[in-house]
Image 1 (cartoon, rainbow, N blue to C red):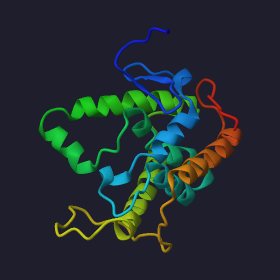
Image 2 (cartoon, helix red, strand yellow):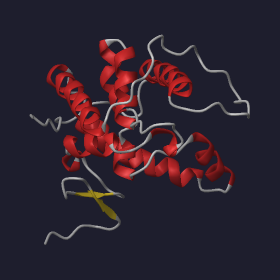
Image 3 (cartoon, rainbow, N blue to C red):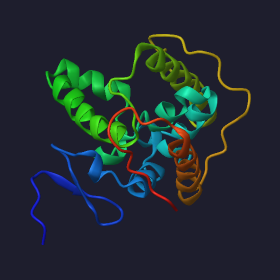
Image 4 (cartoon, rainbow, N blue to C red):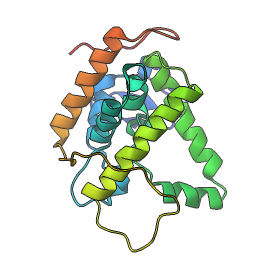
Length: 201
């Protein structure tokens, strides 16, 4: 049995993800895609099962080609950490003094995953803005289509939602759609650092 540093978590394939020191070699894209397709957005506070993988596909689809890989993988660390943490929960950890630990945990996972895809981390400013804008528009669309109305006003306004309504995918389709986009992008994207960990289905 291979010895590995703790803490670690088991991924869907049975592979191990070392939480404190992952490297690009630890990235197995089908594991990330399956975990994201089984992870519900909004911490589960949706009217239907709606996955992070589908959210990432929606963000990807809004972006020009040069930003699509970043958009598809912008929440990929949630596959490694095992959950989608809503913004108010992150704010709570900030107020309790644990926000820096959460940010560090996210950064550790993203550094390995993005390097495996040949993406820079942190994103350059133009890429970060494009992904954030698409993420917020996806959020507005999700609020309309997969959430019940909330009686508490949000602190900041959201952009207009997309014209088409979200039809949530079952997890196998979400995984398939995520990997379809990923494999297409990894086949054409330039490598910016090291070698990409490409999975061929």
